Amino acid sequence: MERLLRDLVERTLRRPREAALALIALNPPLEARLLGLGIVMAASAALGTAAELLFSFVTKLDLGAPTAPVPMAFLQGALMLYAAKVMSSLGRFFGGTGSFRDALLLVVWIEFVLVLGQLLELLIMVFFPLVSLIGTLGLLGLMFWLLIQFTAALHGFTDLMKVGAGVIAVFFGSAMLFAVGMLAFGITPPVVMIQ
Image: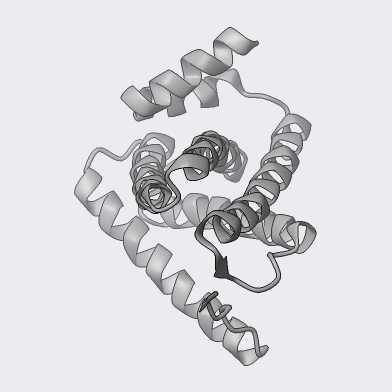
C-alpha cells in the first residue's frame, strides 16, 4: 500500500493526467472515497491550525486566536464536495464524461498531495518562516495545475488552455461568492499585529 501511494504521488507530480487515470482505474468503493475525504479534511485542518500557531510563534506576529480545527475541517469538506460537484457538472456541460464519484476521488487525492506539501511547509517554517510563504504560493500553483490536469483527464478533454481558463474562472468566481457570503455573516479576516 505504501509503495502504491508513493508511486501515485510521484506520478501525480510528474505525469498528473496519467496519475488521474490510474486513480480512476482503481475504482475504490464510495465508502473508501468518503473515508479519504474525512481523513484529508481532518489532516488539512489540523495542519492549518498548527501552521498558524507555529508561524505566530516564530515570527512574533499576533495573529489572534488560531482557527478552530473542527469548523475548519467541516469547511474543508464542504469545499471539496463543492469542487467535485463543479468539476463533474461543468465538465459534463461542456461535453465531458466524468462522474461525481470520480471527481470526488480526484479532489480528495489532490488534497492528500497538498497535505503532504503542508507537512513539508511546516518543517521549513521551523527554520525559515518567511520562506514558507513562498511554499504556500507553490502549493497554490500546484493545486491549480492538478485541478486543470485532473479535470482534463476526468472528462477526456485535450485542450488544457480551455480547461485552465474554466478552472481559474470558476475558482475566482466561487471565491468572490464565498467572500461576499462571509461578509454577509459578519466574518472578517484577522488583523495581524506586530508585537
